[in-house]
Image (tube, rainbow, N blue to C red):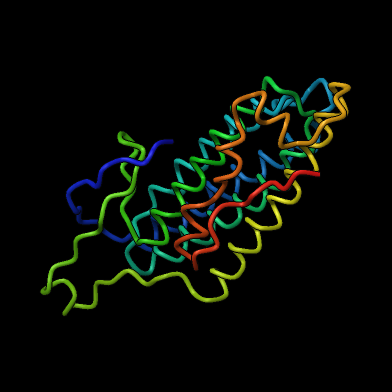
Length: 223
């Protein structure tokens, strides 16, 4: 997902307690369905037999999570579900066979995830049509009445950083298995260069990590 110009600030309304309960139940069911499909990925009855199917399913969940308004008390709900999705995806991708044909799709999904986290970290309202976050507008009267959007906690920030750094290591090991499967004996870096994907993987999660503290992207070192 390319970086887009900023949009006009938008207002948002917190979910009611009833809406929040319904959303939590719905998303919990979606995650359960995802987990069941992943665990049965090698069985003929699964609905997630390939990594492409899995990424399509998780993209639907990502879209739902991002539409949770960043207004307290709904703000923490969006963060919690996005952390859950991030953990599930980064740990599940390597469970599928790797091949050059699927790598662009994986990179595109991870770039979308990076863009999504940047919007969440900036307490932005997600615009599903533009596929980007827009600044949240809270005027002085609303603020005086207690309307606010709390930033993620230090614990959440630490967990997110850990997920991305650890996930990058897992992905690199997965990419190495692609070389082995293709009978190649060169480095992961060389393989990605041949596929025109080196730059994308070098900048993996760079938006989020820069925002969290200037770590930059996850550079895949030559072996």
